[in-house]
Length: 94
Image 1 (tube, rainbow, N blue to C red):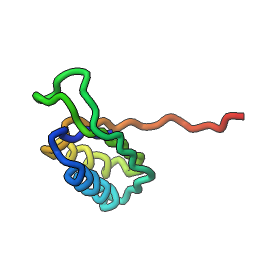
Image 2: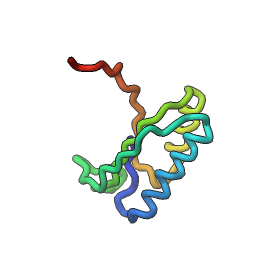
Image 3: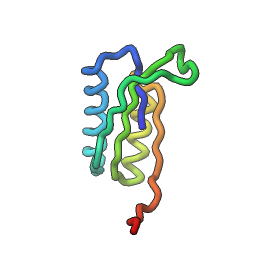
Image 4: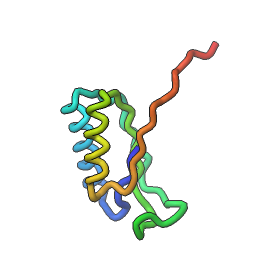
């Protein structure tokens, strides 16, 4: 999940997401799904901002590629916060 600056327009947010999906592909990973949640209000102020664009990306990437992705997310000025979570094992319900 990544949260981009709320003062950006939709085109800038899409460009930012595209840049990171390209980085994932360049690192040998695959993007399974990109889910744009849109602009949402924060529960508390983050870096003097009250809202941001939430985007959830389901991906598969090597551990070395993940390190580079997280480094680039930390360096990007438009990214306010990011979080990488390993999903649990998916089981079929009967």
